[in-house]
Length: 316
Picture 1: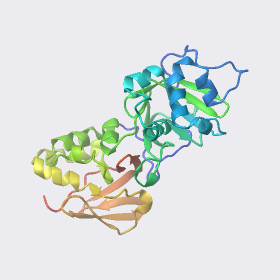
Picture 2 (picture 1 turned 90 degrees about the horizontal axis):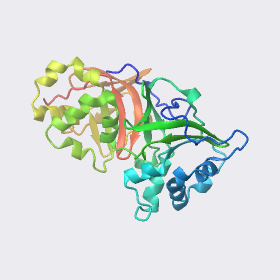
Picture 3 (picture 1 turned 60 degrees about the vertical axis):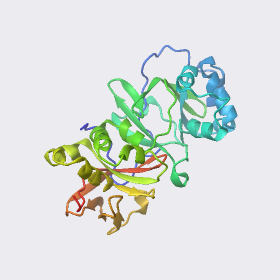
Picture 4 (picture 1 turned 90 degrees about the vertical axis):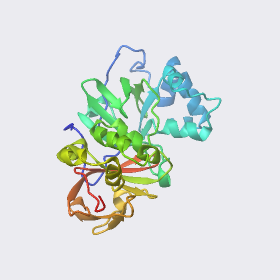
């Protein structure tokens, strides 16, 4: 697995300085003269490549928000990005448009390229369209090719300075992800995604429904550690292992967990136990222990907590 995943133990890194870098074309005419300070909306309104974005902000009644004191970090899609995403302002509902736009905003922080850290981290966006009005998470990764968001969107120009924050121009519209989308976006979960597709019971389709779901997601290294066992499982047994990592009908945040708590999984009511003693661990039906290394990756239909090993049910 990659060694650069930002494991934060019990608490997910939220909107604090972390991860942006100028990449791609730095000669774009996107940075206003130093002596011409403007807020985020004024900058967007003064640049023709953002005319769709400005129209969308107006339609979703978000102009006054982004004219406020902030500070905000805004990922700004160009007109071409909106066209490529197939977003038609004449047909999309105001509520759906607002959800998409707020997913491009990190509130309460002005995050510039000087705040970059190598590797991966998750940030809480201004979109509160998760279960129970929770803030949706965004994956941001800095690597050799610059900054990538949710696995496929590139920051083409960073650090367009505004009086109330900063703009980073992106080459695609960033769409909120469900739990499957978040797993697919993160290169540390490729084995999990492959297993979901290979198992019986249509797990990928199931985890793309409304939910909510709580998913305890093992890293690639977790599967690699028991590769011989995994290779010997039937697709039915693989489904039992994977559904043992899922709690159906609940969006269980880290703050909802308690020491000694018994959790009922989606695998025929098989249970596992939460242990909190400095770190957070899970004891499975076979007596094995897995450590929770990252919590509260919030998706549109549930939440993900990351495990360093696979938990094993008792009904294989």
